Image (cartoon, rainbow, N blue to C red):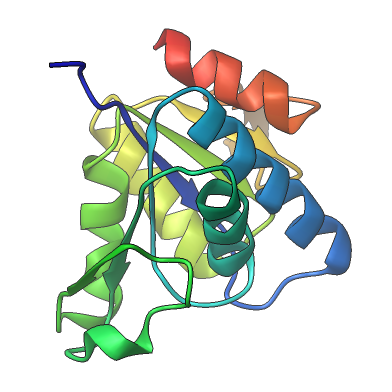
Length: 156
């Protein structure tokens, strides 16, 4: 049996059209690579990435904050109703071999932190930059395109 590689895609529940297009491309590339897309299962970046993966025939897992699996966006094939609110961010980050961040707000930042604390690589597309004591931290791997981000994620 072929190993299923989980890759989490994180980003804001409301995003720009540019971020949505980028997230959809990421989802499509994840499906083409034969990996499983994990996300928060709601709107914005999550829905766009889910759409891209689903249309390309991929498996989409949504880890939802609430207790109702029907709250998932229509592209999620497996909805996990965690019932733990934002604490689900830890599960989204730690369930993956790699995390791809597209844009994002503070929830995305928390997922980035959980992944980095766990030694899980984070690939960034127009996302947060981290500075500690006035010095940039090169802990988020920068990618220029969706294809590059997924290629990096698959190599980790």
